[in-house]
Length: 310
Ligand code: MG
Image 1 (cartoon, rainbow, N blue to C red):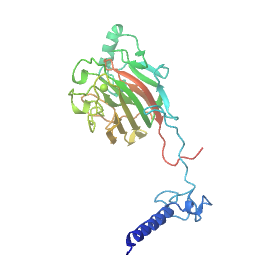
Image 2 (image 1 turned 120 degrees about the horizontal axis):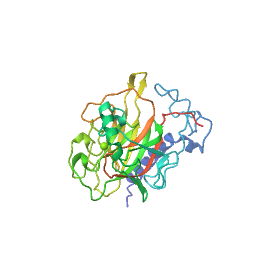
Image 3 (image 1 turned 90 degrees about the vertical axis):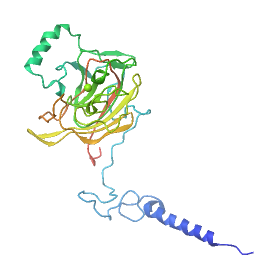
Image 4 (image 1 turned 90 degrees about the horizontal axis):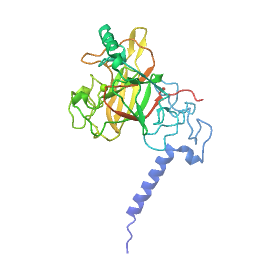
C-alpha cells in the first residue's frame, strides 16, 4: 500500500519556517539567555542596529531608559500606585470651595463689576460654602460654591465618577448640570444627556461650547458614570500661546475626544480664546446649582517619554 508522505513534508517545512521566525525575533532564547548588549544571542538590547530617526537611541537600544513601574489598582477605575487621590469618599481635605460669577466662564476669572455688585447684593442669602459629604460621595449643594483642588496641575490624567439624581428634574442645561474644569478653565460638561436633548456642544461629554462628544454614551440618571480624561495644558511663552490645550476623554469607557484641541477657556454664548495663565492651576468641579454627586477622584501627573531612570 502506497503511503502519501506529502502532508508530512508540508508540516515539516511549516514547523521549520516557524522556528526560524521565532529565533529571529528572540535570538537570546536561541542562545540560552542574555549576553553583552550588541552581541549575537542577546535579548536585552542591541547597539549594532540602526539609529531611530531624530532620537539618540538605536532600535532596541539597551541603554534607553526604562519606564517607571506603576502598580495598577486591584479593581478597574481605582487609583494606581502613582496617583494623587483627591477624593476617596471619606474626606475633602484636598479641596476648597469658592464662588464664581453666576453663569460666568473661565472659572470665575471673567467677573465684571456689574456681576460683582450683583453677587455682593445677594451674598447674605447664600448658603455657607461646601458640599454634602455622605455615603462615600460628595454632592453639590446649590449656590454653595465650586469644589476646587488645593493642589495645582499641568498635564494630567483624571479619573472622576459622577451620578445624576434618579428623580432628576429640569430640562436641557438645567438637568444635572455640573462640569469638570481642568485648570479651572477648560470644561468637560457634566449633564444628564440620557434621552434629554440640549445643544450638542453643551451635552454630556462636550468640550463645552466647542466640540460635542463623538458619541452620546450617557447612562440613565441614578447610575454611576465615569470620566477618564487626559489633559495637555496650554503652553505660553510670555503672553504668546505656543501650544494649545488638548483633551482626550473617555465616558464610561467610550472615546469622546481623541487628542482634540481646545479653543480656549470655557465661556457661555461666546467664542473661546486663550488668555495667558499659569502653567498649573486647580481642578474644579462646577456648581451649577443642581445636586450632582461625585466619587473616586484621582489624578496622575503626566511626563514625557524617555525620562531618566531613578
Ligand atoms: Mg457645566
